[in-house]
Image 1 (spheres, rainbow, N blue to C red):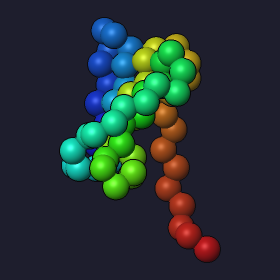
Image 2 (image 1 turned 45 degrees about the vertical axis):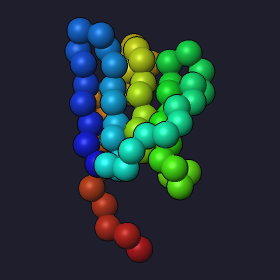
Image 3 (image 1 turned 90 degrees about the horizontal axis):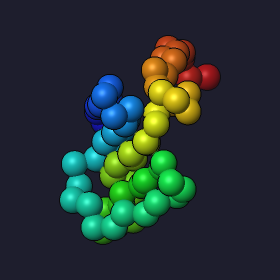
Image 4 (image 1 turned 180 degrees about the vertical axis):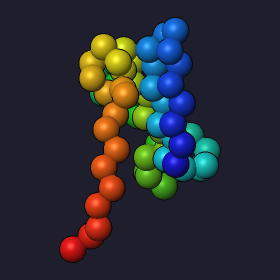
Length: 65
């Protein structure tokens, strides 16, 4: 997984997999999800990420129970 934030455009891209994207779906005007052929999520694109509170995100480190 890797993330890229485009500061000038306030766009956050979260890449979850290296699989090829075969389908993209807009959940609403600022959230777009891309899927692989097997139905798994490959990428999330969040427009106005900072304005909507998605970036910067908080990172917490914890141990599983």
